[in-house]
Length: 323
Image 1: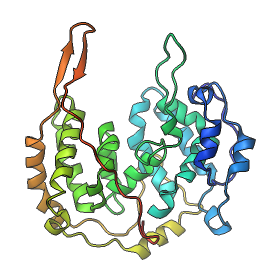
Image 2 (image 1 turned 30 degrees about the vertical axis):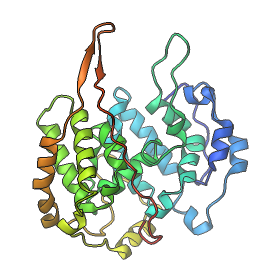
Image 3 (image 1 turned 90 degrees about the horizontal axis):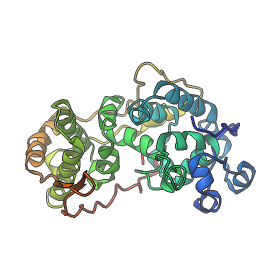
Image 4 (image 1 turned 180 degrees about the horizontal axis):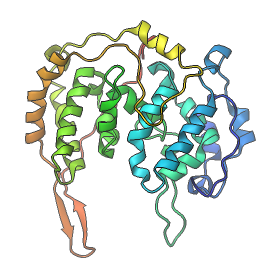
């Protein structure tokens, strides 16, 4: 994975406070030259109770990450679409549980710091080795290495179908921008946006990331005046099915060669997605794409001066039963 020699992780995940990460995360760890101080970090952890711990075994996660590196060693940027649904199906939990950043801190600092470095380390430079940004170890749900993948799978899956998640992960701007929007909480909106983005990618549009960002901003802005849940009613997911799926996760294995199946908590009605598609197609075609200009001094492309829209971020404050 990285120059780090993977440490032997504890048998179960735990909760590692942000303060402990901030205390022990330095450039040596971020560059992969040093291993995080396992003993000191372990002292700061809060353990799960016995029942929850059964669903928090580290061995399946560690094996999954090792397989991800083996498969994508030559193209680390392509790993997300393969890993996101499988991580979600391996770490089965409610949204409320996943919203606790201490879980992801533990995974990044104690279980798999070498994966964080492998996936996100920047290029080495004359002034020193490249590093993985601190937010990849402990940061917002749309930035932290593992949280971003779990939430991408959760927000873009269509019930038990992880196919839309693979589409979402084909371009990083979906995870970096689209996943931060409040409107993604509305399942028909998420599915309609992925349909439009999938068509954009399949058409071979140059610089699709610029178009995805413009489209996402347009959908978010329109959502401030249009109530998408009025245009496209969503049926509440089946909470009992979700919890059955979560409880069945202890000891379950995830297929590495085929997409796993998510919880049978209900797919989005096709009529709801169809109700939004014409509007979203129009927003995509009309959304102003940020200009790029050529810097003659450096020969590199630079974005135009159009300010980037501020997006508020998806709400993680969910009811405890399905959040």
